[in-house]
Length: 188
Image (tube, rainbow, N blue to C red):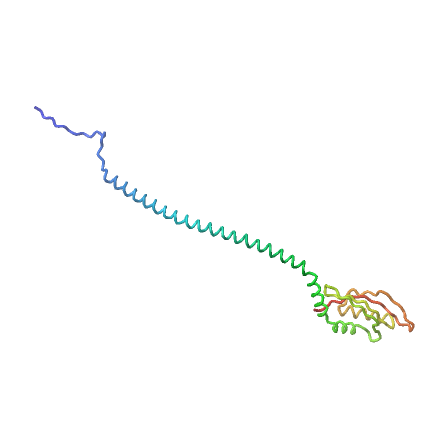
């Protein structure tokens, strides 16, 4: 009798595998995956909270900007209304200040220094303007045309402008009476 022993041949239909190493890697991978999911969830929740804070801050800032723009529009409207309401009063006060600040002594001194010794002024009509100028009409008596030209040249040299002889007459004594208009810049 032959005892046949059964021989177990592995013909690759059921190969032997070391499954412990596979389960170890699978466990490690699972743990790493769980840790990553936990950390990413934590980061997501943290930044979601910060995003809400930033959105709230942006909304508050936008509201502040809108309020500031509304206040600016209201202020501009108030300024325009105040300008309309007080323009006449301000112009009046500025005109008074300009008239008070005009140096008549300096003006008359300049006019006197321009006048030749043989000439004299018989009438003077000043008009103050808003642009810090004075328009002046005056009549001067001169012995001759050369003295009149000397006066005009002296006025030019002293900064008087727009010098214009308007009319000329001769009086009974033979003196030349000339009406002159000019402009004088005020020093304020």
